[in-house]
Length: 455
Image (cartoon, rainbow, N blue to C red; front, side, top):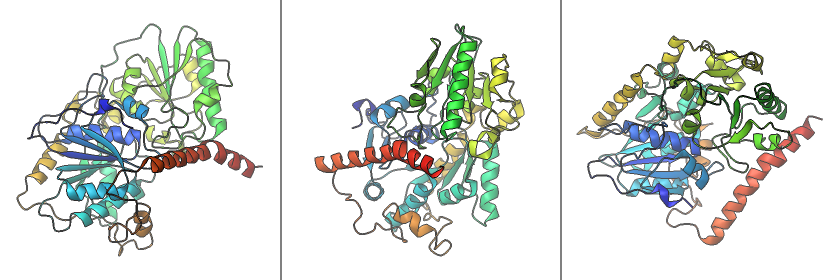
């Protein structure tokens, strides 16, 4: 159940109606905050922590799946909506066919975006006017660039979080002969907060953990041990392990080996703590942010907080830290133990959409202007035209659509989950049990099987 704190009074009649469909806590945060920033009219700026804001007439939909956020995760994100409910893909499409919206934000993994584009094209057939469809990425794009982008092609706006991403996105689309005009440069919507003004008392080091980077026990144990070692070497410092989720919760990525469980086996020093909560609030008291490749590094750089991207496990594509080559932030725990303070490369930072120079305030102007123009078109908008069709990708697209109970034409398949009623008590219990079994399999059974396979 979603707590009542997420429901607020309706906006004024002039406010655009926006629907956000998300499949995880981080994508809900990105989608809802993006909705507030791209809505035509006065910008809905983030608060002091770069967080809580109320987007105009925002309706939230959480796509049912393994990463559907819990009430605790939603509360931690801190983004409000007029309504927020869990749906299947057919249920969402039914709502989009029956209700009027101005903007639809698809905050989903690539396959989900592609399925919704085809489904929305089908349910809006023959409609004189349709909403503007917007999608993008929740953070740093360091893998599956072509695959993810082509799965998002067909939206009216494909948001790029930086100048560098915008250039890469256009190059991919143009390289396959697809229309690249939807690519629109913006920035990460959750940047903000007070600039760093000097060391706190005590000096605070924060390690921003990631659910799936690194993946294996050896590397995660190594990083935890080095963090604990840093706390012992510097007893005058406070050392925090910032965690994304509690065991049993899922985020955008699967976490098989939570740091909480690894830490239970260690004798932790008094100045070492595990913390949850809003990243912006943690950054308020951070003097040194350390990570492997978390988007938190960009949040930290935006505030000009000293930021380190670790090289201990190598600079490798699977880790994502290769994205930070040229940033001036790459360093090892040995260097940090000895007091190293990184100095970011200003040109690199500017290309990442971090805009620590103040340009962030205008980062969403182009997107707002484009959406206002599309909404104001007297001729209405043309049908959605994804790059992938049954003709261009007959061996790929049908499988993507079928996973969301859609046929090759974007229509709902027979036997899909009912879209006309809420699940009964028994169905809700079964669903919770199934999700719990899945998470148990991911966090307990799968690692055991993997270890057995390595014998």
